[in-house]
Length: 67
Image 1 (spheres, rainbow, N blue to C red):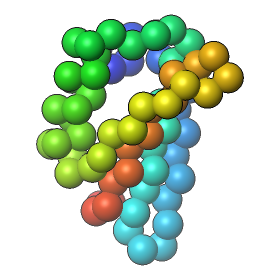
Image 2: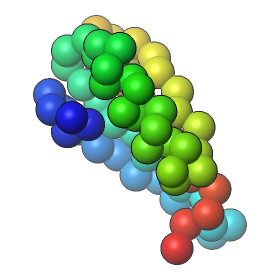
Image 3: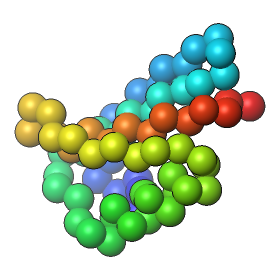
Image 4: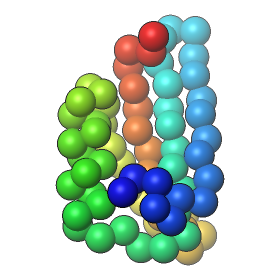
């Protein structure tokens, strides 16, 4: 479900054990997709942010405890 219509993934990490994962989609996301993403965010202990950028959906997940 999370990978359906996925266009691009970007990773940014720091030396202080934090990471930002950005998922880019070319199509709108429905409520069911957002429920799955929010559940994944809870399991990973991160916050999920949604934004529309240049006609694409940008989903950011900030993970505070990288392994």
